[in-house]
Length: 307
Image 1 (cartoon, rainbow, N blue to C red):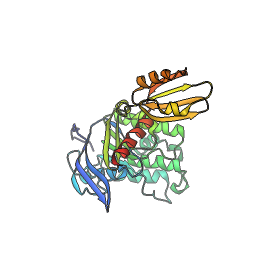
Image 2 (cartoon, helix red, strand yellow):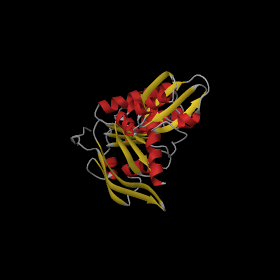
Image 3 (cartoon, one colour):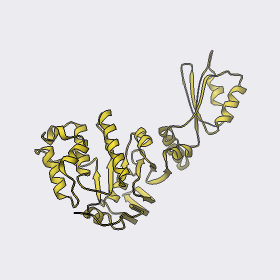
Image 4 (cartoon, rainbow, N blue to C red):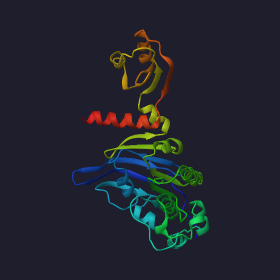
């Protein structure tokens, strides 16, 4: 069946969405839009609201207030229309069936099915297609879940910790496939604890903390938002940690052997003060934060504000 619906400028939207479980506010006043062809990483510490956000997007839970729309309609309707594919952490796979049979079933049930052979090949599971599902490794199970999520011609693909259990080569192949999907105009939204994946793969990064959206931008913009830079250098002789900790604008401090690693919200002023101590740092390096360090800095700053 050929789809005739023109792609919208907004794939999905959250408008002032809230969701609580008892005393826990899992999603708090969340407002954001997803657009066609974006690869979007959803980051946050445990309990940040990532899974709850994905559940709301997929219609698995209802918001207490606010509106969630997917392709201009409800999440449930978008899924019935065959426009959304999902790969979730929760939920097991059918056992006592072959991989090929399970993928065939998923394709048969989809409104816009893809050829089974193509789905198996894209997920990298052609060689295990005749293996029983209950005989798979953890990484193989993840690839089967990915196959089920892409059994049809979806416009939005939602992935919750998709590469958990995959080895390095499988992860690289997986993300190459996801990039192909985005290049074809599909939107890919994924939650991950592998921040290096978000840094390398995502066009856009969303940082959640206690249900709130703290940051939304490219990986470079998120790093800049952290407002700190890394400074590393070696010192000869005795290291006076007290004096070093007194340097201005420090946000993090670590000494390992002769090597000092610090973070500063004003690297120029910190380095100037370092020389002002009469020290002569060797192998001095000043660089921006990586996404992981920026993520930690942003979430720690939010914790400090709430304290």
